[in-house]
Amino acid sequence: MRLLLVEDDEKLIRHLKADLNRAAYAVDVAENGIDGEFQGDEEPYDAVILDLGLPDKPGLEVLKSWRSKGNKVPVIILTARDQWHERVDGLKAGADDYLGKPFHTEELLARLDALIRRRHGHAGEELESAGLRLDADHQEVILPDETRHTLTRTEFRLLQYLMLHPGVILSKTRLTEHVYEGDSDRDSNVIEAYIKRLRKVLGQDLIQTRRGQGYVFGAKDS
Image (cartoon, rainbow, N blue to C red; front, side, top):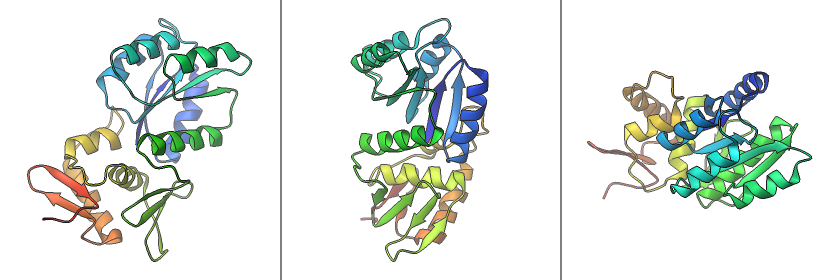
């Protein structure tokens, strides 16, 4: 899954981006409100982590602008822990969740995971689809027979996105947009290689190819 981190604290950016990458998220960064608003409008992010105290344009105004334009990207706002009114204002403006600074990365990861699952109609502690379960803590897929397979970060991101969109035709372009960071070399042919690797673990039937269109997870050819 691909995230946008809108934050101006360089030290926090460095540590948080590394932690999010280790948790198998692809992360783009914007260090001011103007750039953050633009990126959030132009790129199909799965979620945004938005600091409210930003230079050039406050985070609250960025959020209001997104919502006024119909941008429904899930947003977790970061606020000073003692500024309760900022949390209230953020939630009223359309934020999906909030986290007070300072915070533990583990809590942020748990909130992100829950937010993304809820947005796609998955209420359980683990993402489940087509008989598979994803263990985000260990980056493993659990098969119906309870066999566990460890995935690479890219494999995990790809399978997670497929499982969140069962029965939907997903083009290579769409998959690359949600699997890779903005400055990555997005060779869509690499997606084919990762699909082949996932099929070796999951079997050949769960991910179907739609020639000229893309891939469908959890649906068999008619």
